[in-house]
Image 1 (cartoon, rainbow, N blue to C red):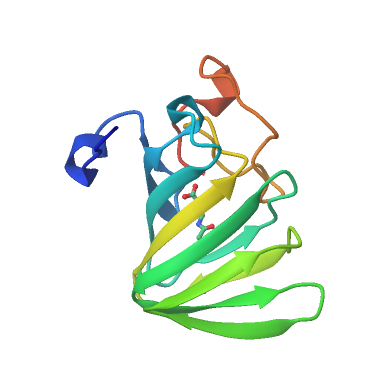
Image 2 (cartoon, protein in one colour):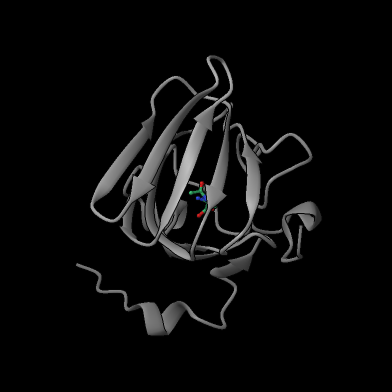
Length: 139
Ligand code: 9YT
């Protein structure tokens, strides 16, 4: 069994700053669970275009307030604490944070660890730990 504490992730390679968000990646592909689990802070006042074409993601908000707009139908879904949304159709969306939002994110398949969004809001299908484009940098 493994036990991982958030404090063990902060200031390591498993803490990735995407600019609008900072993702503390608690469990990754290397942990062999078949999914990854992240504790992510979305920064207040930000708007992020996201389209995970290669992953399914569930996002459970445990603190803060904002909204998700699905771009296929322009529907706006208010998101606040104790609410989960599931991108079960690889939904292209805009994530807007009114306040800082703390989100627990689960990715299937798991991400490798250092992914940041590309210009289309996508993570690549799989990223090797040594791929230079996966290195830690702001978006
Ligand atoms: C909620 C969301 O999709 N935020 C973007 C960051 C991503 N979830 C991550 O890598 O933790």
